[in-house]
Amino acid sequence: MKVRPDLVPETERDHLEVIQLTDEPIPSSHIYMEAQIFTPDSQRLILHRSAHPHGSDPKDPEHQFLICNLKDNYSLTPITTELGTTGPSISPDGDYLYYFVNKTELGGGGRLTLKRVGLDGSEREIICVLDHAIPETDFRLSRPYPLSTISSDGRRIAISGFLGDGNSAGARWGLLVFEIEEPSVRLVLHGPTWCNMHPQYTRQTDSVASHDIMIQENHGNIIAADGKVEKLVSGLGADIHLIRDDGTDLRDFPWGRDGNEFCQGHQCWQGKSDMAITSTSTRKPDERQLISGRAAAHVGDEGINTPGGWRNDLSRSFDGPDFWHFATDIDGTRLITDAGPKDRGGAVWLFDLPEEEEGALANARKVANPGSSWQKDTHIHPFLSPDGGSGFFNSDESGVLQAYMVRGWQVA
Picture 1 (cartoon, rainbow, N blue to C red):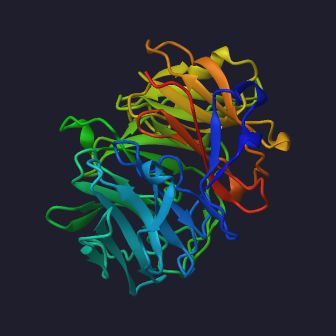
Picture 2: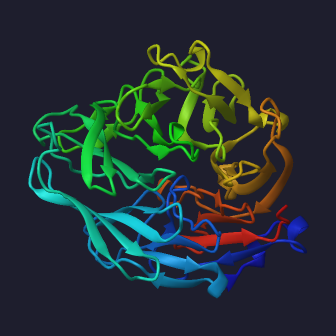
């Protein structure tokens, strides 16, 4: 752990503190910022070593998930040792880490194992092993997505993956939901356009909404026979949907796909509400905006023109928004985001989210100058602790990717 005042904007050095959490000569980073990797008391989180912001190599023996204990002088303790660990999620009560062990093989064979372990390293157990075709299908899963998502009641965990046999280009991808209490797995949806799904269970806790998962569809992608994504989108680009975890009630968010506005490919829930936020790129004006929205009934991938879709430009009060990746706290009161210009190492900004649905981001505050090279494997990817009192980001400013934290603003 190192204190890094040089990464704090000059105007904030009397108030804020940046702490470098990792310092090994191998790359370390935070998990992708939409992942559920924090305990609810905001004291412990999962990060990983020998990894990058978009995942890790399943054959890398150096890769490990680590518990970072903020209360214990930012100590880092390995919580996994197996080869091929991926898709971590902390249970909503903060008692367990769920993760997958990827030993899948393209075209059949191999296995995907769902495990659980207490955050003190005890009670490690296997929940479910998928070493056969997905029930009621002929599909074998490989290339599991590096992100999982756990339901707000802690009873289900979802992950996506490749369903191809290795012989045909343009094969399908699918979304799998694992039941935890009475272990089982089901295929929720599948198709060739689901190669980058970013599945995210809602944070809402009522019994109906807790089954909703936000997912991303990438139209016009090109997938090689081995599942490698050769082209992510084309034409009108990606759009974002909502689906129940039994595969019913597909809905659409009113973002992108009009030839001017394009979804960048990152979105998250606005706290525990039924609103979500996406980052967009627009041609006119040339901006990277943050747009909130609610899903409406599925009518056919109409994006911004979805009938009945509600949306709000959160970034309209910021002159020339250039925002990319972002996250909110659990109550939906704060938002943290990275921003350009990229050639100056980027910046991390903190905002207050509006109390009124139609409001805009307020109280803009630059909280870090990360000095990132802004390559794909060094993305800043900021996110907040659940209580909104601390921010986290990645940077390769030292020449090696590392994980950082910024703190010092007042929490209400």
